[in-house]
Image 1: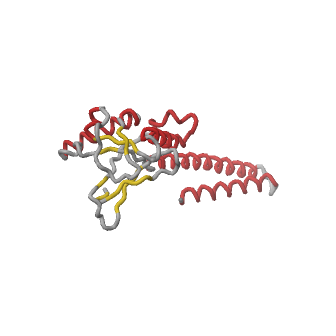
Image 2: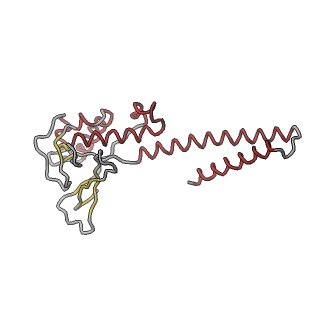
Image 3: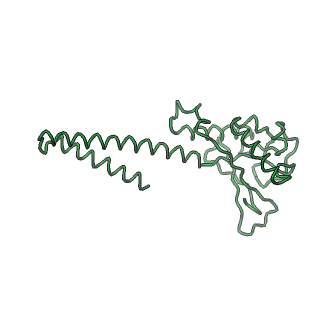
Length: 211
């Protein structure tokens, strides 16, 4: 929640649109903005899995940010919609004033966002509106902001898979060295090579767990 805040562009590429909220120390803006977080599950990115593997979440995020740019009309304009219109599935005829300087374009977010995201948004908005009357009223305006939490989970998943692979390599090297010792093999190049690989993988595993 940003009381007395602003909505600002925060994209990292020219062909993307991402917005975020911030407040100056005086909190002297007449506006307030807050984020409405919607869960994105790993299965939501299955369409990108074949090409991008464990980084399918990153590809999913980029596709949404590019689509958001196209919907806004370029020049970092963002698509927007009143909450009541989003719930009704119609384009807003007018939009509230905003602190987002590039400007906003009326757009039906139901046509922009994946349905898996839209139905979660509808469920959440209606739930909050039952708890706090007017939460989903005329004054509310929706825009798009992507978050890193889900994609961080994707990267952590990739790291875990790598650690599991490295752990299997360590175990294999350990068994190989033990077998060579059992057969009475001395300090040959092969034995030393196995020990070096074992030490290397153990060091990577330790660093991965510590991070």
